[in-house]
Amino acid sequence: MRRPAVWLLSVATAALLINSGDAFGSRSFWFEGLPDPPAARSAGTPSIAWIEQPVDHFNPRDNRTWSMRYYENDQFLSESNAPILIMIGGEWEITPGWLRSGQMYNLASTYGAMMYYTEHRYYGESYPTNNTSSENLQYLNVDQALADLAYFIEIVKKQRNLENSTVVLFGGSYAGNMAAWARIKYPHLIKGALASSAPILAKADFYEYYEVVTVALSRYSSQCSVDVNDAFLAVEELLQTSTGPETLKRFFNLCNDIDTSSWQDVASLLNTLAGVFAGVVQYDAVDSTGQSSVGRMCDVMTATYLGSPLQRLAYLTSWSTCVDTSYASLVEAYINEDWNSYAATSAMRPWYYQTCTEYGYYQTANSDKSVFGTLFQIEFFTELCKDLYGDYYNEYLLDSAVTRTNIVYGGLKPEVTNVIFTNGDLDPWHALSVLEDLNESSPAILVMGTSHCQDLYSDLSTDSAEMTAAKARVRELVGQWLS
Ligand SMILES: *[C@@H]1O[C@H](CO)[C@@H](O)[C@H](O)[C@H]1NC(C)=O
Ligand SMILES: *[C@@H]1O[C@H](CO)[C@@H](O)[C@H](O)[C@H]1NC(C)=O
Ligand SMILES: *[C@@H]1O[C@H](CO)[C@@H](O)[C@H](O)[C@H]1NC(C)=O
Ligand SMILES: *[C@@H]1O[C@H](CO)[C@@H](O)[C@H](O)[C@H]1NC(C)=O
Ligand SMILES: *[C@@H]1O[C@H](CO)[C@@H](O)[C@H](O)[C@H]1NC(C)=O
Figure (cartoon, rainbow, N blue to C red):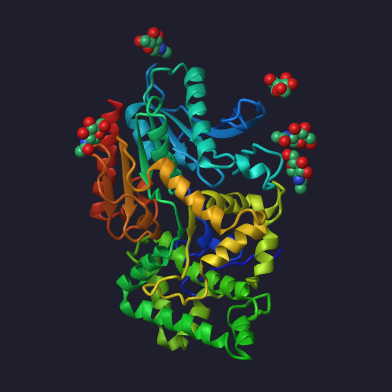
């Protein structure tokens, strides 16, 4: 199977890499795991462990179990009632980094806490079922994953003789939803939670995502969003001509011919191209020279010496090995039910299932305020649900699933105490998160000029004053829960 390597040519630096290996440019489909922070100098060695969990927490007639994986680090564990801090894994494989550095690690150091990082069922190596058939994916949902977390807390408390310890959760992105929702569901087990960049409102047609991407480009330079718009319009125009598809194939180094009679092939191409911008904006970071990834990308998009806006877009993507954007290949890649297949190891098959059955979150071009053309709409995503999991998983199921998620968890207005909601206003996901205090103990902290989950990292020399203050406030509030 061919995979796209997506990267920038001359301006490529580690921070800006629109990193490769993420398949089909479909980055915009999912959140992507949180990159590990660099280990602190004195970091201990987190170890892997496993516990048994029920396959189905809500059916007493089903007594099957499976092994859930987690990391633990007890290097700061001091006394018998020491706090327990848990980093929650979302739709990715857990890695030891979050137990070696970051905001939670620093808090553990201050308060002598036990640290854990849990793996979400169906991701990494936490396999509740034999494979990822649609039948088996019925046990993949946040309700089950939150129950896993509750059982996890009970089990490790007993294991470590920490029955009376205070538990605080940390989560970013989808795992941020889990942190907030776990506190709502299991307040007797959890004292408080940090929900970083948590899109707690489920929404099928999430067109706001690309609106925020557009704002991020415009904020760097208005010419940037103008030129991106021109480039996308040029792509759409070429698709209407007889030789245009061949030109685009050459420009973007596609492996496949573009079948313009297939709206799904067309949507897949545009979605892939827009995904390049999504990836850079969502993970925007400032390097040591003070330049942001968005800035470097916009410098290419507005560089007239590189030719037309379309040519600049081609230059920007510069896929070194050919990229397969055909819809058939997309389906083929993610329909495989084997745990060892790319469908599972990329997290895409399980995560996309969760979007079809719980959240939507489909990042469409359905807005005048975004600059990525008009050719990828909600139907593209709902058709993919059907093609990957079966006709049952259609737009009606999606609508009732989204409604259910918001009824059960309270949408943007859950009644909850001791949950801190942090967001960056340049993170496209903030449009679905809590931006105003819910309660004096559940504040919203919106950091200007910041992208996805940045507040989970330790203080950085490149942090803005506002970010530094936000991180300090989180430490102070968590400190109050722990003392
Ligand atoms: C699980 O349930 C089945 C069917 O009721 C029963 O035969 C089996 O002994 C149970 N297994 C365990 C470990 O309880
Ligand atoms: C997985 O398959 C094995 C046989 O290959 C079977 O014994 C087992 O019950 C299956 N597990 C689940 C959870 O379906
Ligand atoms: C998936 O696992 C189930 C048992 O859980 C089994 O019946 C089915 O045949 C498996 N599918 C594939 C494609 O192996
Ligand atoms: C937890 O608190 C209870 C009630 O105060 C006490 O009996 C028990 O010994 C404590 N457990 C530990 C491990 O400290
Ligand atoms: C926050 O929640 C607590 C507990 O439910 C309640 O006593 C308090 O009045 C709430 N504060 C606000 C500002 O809503």
